Picture (cartoon, rainbow, N blue to C red):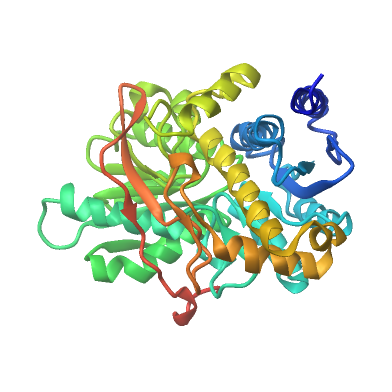
Length: 420
């Protein structure tokens, strides 16, 4: 039996065991003595499980692909230490500490809220982390936390520009209400709105309404919004609470008289499934990846693994996000290994972490097999990709209605309200 086949069998066994024990497992197995160890933490259980569970699947499926079909990175297997943070800040902090203690080279996670909990520990220890979904507070000013994709402030800015150029046809300024998840998912959108609303000619209805991740009714808050007669309702949340908000708005007869849009944390197939296709028909959203079936180089292999390992996840673009995230980490490891060699990385600690940033993250110039915007580090901007597309739900499908739009750099730290 040749080495490649041996590695593939071992990798499949390891992944199978890992996925069976996913909610309980504290560390992953490697397929060889010399490995490159990374930490992955996702909210596989808890209030955001409708996103985190399949994002964890995608992270691990992509690592399986790299290890078994590409021979790992530079001939070394990527070893994963995986932890469920359950969308709990305390668990997230503990996870990052464990990753550092266990000599992981880098850690990745799904959500801005969990990275907000982890960022102080990561920055103080110079431990590099990449969040798939981000808010400006995570890296303005830039330190050791990076965003895989445009952030929630970028979402608002890109949609608001689209709205003003393509939808608004009234006189004066349109009035926009905000309904925000009460963490960085919502507050990141508010940062973008506060920074750019005047420049774009939009009147914000302030203060915004807020909701919790486990909300079951927002009729009261929407009744207050309805009294303000907004032209736009912008929702920055995750799929489950966003579906509640849109369902309640439908029940209050609000959807015929205003435009509804969602930031990319909410805008996935789970939103349609939870709210109902008829209710969300016409809702706008932004998202930073391609759609399933798009003709890009990485689509066929990702689809193959998704259908083989987690067929129920097919069609949800969150899977694309996390598959791409793992590919980015593999590229970071490749670049760093090329520059400093295995021994520096195997030693772990601050020297290895600094090498990962300087020679890996900050040398990125990677197309991610076409799955989302180009990943390229630019000094002073810890967003690795800057590109979004605007979508609209049509007959239960999220259809792109724009080409890629690059979100601008906003130096939020120069606003006296930022972070308060």
